[in-house]
Length: 420
Image (tube, rainbow, N blue to C red; front, side, top):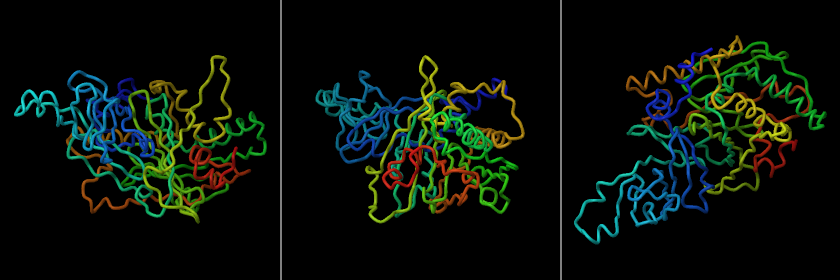
């Protein structure tokens, strides 16, 4: 259990909080490039701040605070210029740094005036990688955008899924440090869901965990498991499954039929999390290289319960739906004062320790784990993952990738997944 104060320290993401200051040392995806294909502005919210993402006529992106410094009109209606975003109310123009670079009437009245030089909006750097637009909200100079393996591979195809969840980020991340939930939530309860849906053909034997272990790595934590019928020579133990600090889960081996990917959890604010499913696949005959704006984007449905407490079983037939309902039913911020952690929760305890260490590092003026500044050490970060997960093969075939299999446009087109 945690005290109320300890739980607050690990969940409050706003500026000036210990966690918020640490989290601001990282880049976060806020929009898929394909979402901006036919639009110039989009509202985004990150780490408790409302912002406007824009694309100017030259194709460059910027992120700026939402209200013009002049008379506070919202810049969601801003006009993209060759360089920057113009407020439609009186024509003030801002560049990607937030600097006001034009004030038409002011300059007419006083051609030599320097009023515009005194006006600067809050703005943050934006970077594109693998079809996602990332924002950095921390102090300058910004670290490099990490070159995680699947993000920088060539000769691949990708798709991107997203859902906005009504819960704190920590609930989603602690799930990734909890192997035992797979046995129950994605196996035992999944069988119950399949029964409710009349899919008895997909009910399978529960895979029972015999041993779990968590090891620190240079990038975060690797979780390992042995289930009944497997050994320490199997990939689930020998290779393991990496969690990339602070908010990413690496899934699947790229050489597999269903590719590999990341689940990226983005703290929108204290009680909202943006959840990204980023998937990467080997190119097949007929595939063409993807431009960033052409990478397919899809929304993952979030379970909703009506006033008569009817359960939406049809969106709970996959890992993603099952995880989401576990996270959001803990409440906006889980009550950890009354939790009862056991031996199966040692991965969660280790992750909390990493958060505390990173917050202390930042408070002491240092860079936390996975902030890269030397291009020579940020060319390609390989994240080993298991080639096969033994617990998925016990019984009828049922894909465990959740959104990355059930809703993936690429896999649906290839007819590579069971449509359950």
